[in-house]
Image (cartoon, rainbow, N blue to C red; front, side):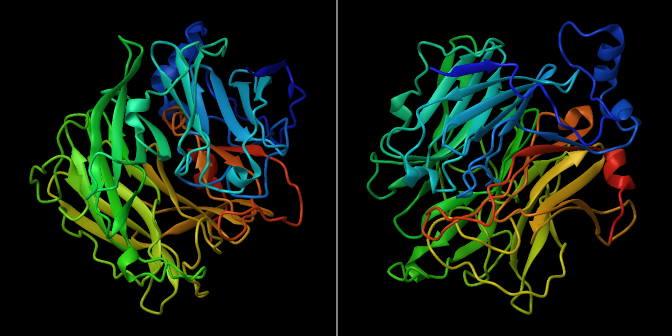
Length: 480
């Protein structure tokens, strides 16, 4: 059971108060309702000024557990409330509720059953949240090849724990990793990887399941959806893109057959990128040529759409975003012609299957993907989102948090500095459910990470805070 400290953090410390996001709650005033209906168009005209909001509890910083880019919903907006989930310095799960009308941090809940030090040192054990229209909040955490994943189902808005707060074990035949929630026309979608004991030739698979609001429980959509053989063994997905009934995804698979797995400093080898997409909320899937694919998908059934050799430092699990004009964008880094990893954006146009790729960064410092578990690099995986009609690619470079975009008619990239300070191994964490209101809301904290998924002591404890920008804030800030 959680401990409720209602009102904690209400002594809000904010850098700027010049822009207040409109309420989307059911009891909003007429003006608030009109603002919510007009959405981004009105939000973009709000008074400029980024905002910083400090969170009430210091975060866990000895690993990247609060900051991997695949922590899809660390922030979640429900009506006129925003929820922020993270591990505190003592390892407890904290859930902070913020009013979007007043910016007040209204209450903080704590779950005292902290993860073990071994799990806290593993940056993959992240917290993810989802919300369903029957009035429940869903939380997943402590999942990286985990036999007993942590799952909570909380009633909204009182956030009391549901007595049947259990994840259906028939979906978890052994160990579970990388749970991520997505909003789709078919309902709340949960994506995760698991061990599969049902087929010895395919010991791992990836599942997509949906929450049935009428029955109040999780049901199968594609379980399994994507299967992996013993070699190359594991596939890794970029963030899915969802728009209505359309879902798009991209994945790479790891070439363990080429890797020296006995070497703790082994070179990680990810092979190429492949696109798949669905127009019926995930019931059937196609490749870029429009071919209907047999289900479950086998990782090698889909031809490489972006051929990348396994020794090119291709990062797995970058960002993804599907726009309303049926373009699915993914972000990742890999080597350029000089063997220096750069951040790239690749776009699949669903209307004709055309794939285009552009290089975003022009870095000069080389590095390699070496070692086991969570690693430390001078750049982060990129997150991708759209604010209005502008697509943004957000990443860390050193101790700078940067957003890149292309202006209309301009083939070059422009870079906006969002924050500069000690960030460590931070990767961008944002509220995808708030973008439709015209606000980019980011969770920020420093994070340190030891080799082989172990803890590491950094130079300072650090604090956790939110940074918020409107499109006008972003486009009006100095660029380089």
